[in-house]
Image 1 (cartoon, rainbow, N blue to C red):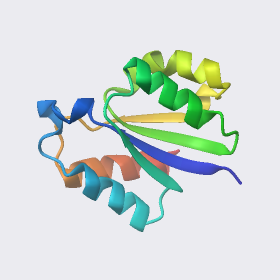
Image 2 (image 1 turned 180 degrees about the vertical axis):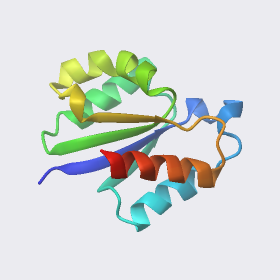
Image 3 (image 1 turned 45 degrees about the vertical axis):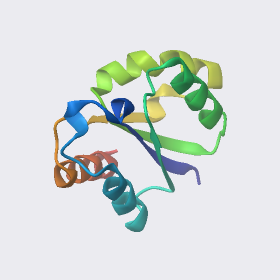
Length: 118
């Protein structure tokens, strides 16, 4: 069976839309509750080094589902398209959720809802 992972993208950690949440508590909750097999933070997946990170990570053909919590899911699909193509990752395995301007608790609930519905 493939692995499920959660990436938290936080707009360099300086964007005001992430100031109400504790990103480490979000990841620890997902990890402790074993909702995914791995968790990670990236400061800016839409940057060039974000493409490199995604391409490298997604070459692992064992990844069944990749959840990305950050900005708008439609934007994520557009921004990550090149990295998905370079790695041969099936785009239908990507699930995004917008957590901007949420509290820690709201973000946790939004991510859980996404995981449970996919």
